[in-house]
Length: 82
Image (cartoon, rainbow, N blue to C red; front, top):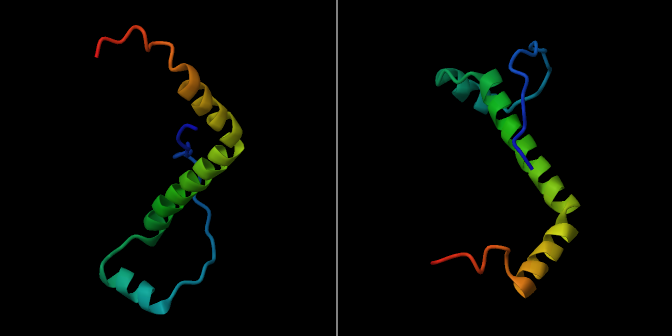
């Protein structure tokens, strides 16, 4: 599943977007860096969506693995001393 990688050296690209005027005013008053905040939260959203995609793509394999472990246990079951 791994973490997402972001090329920190990638150039910045301008994007037009619309934002609630009150939110924008409050962010400016609080000196919140909109670009940095958007990048941070967008990376989190991308990470979550990719995680959900991976889980959906691997659902059958995960279920089968869990069934097998439930029936047969794990390789190290006989080796553990706790």
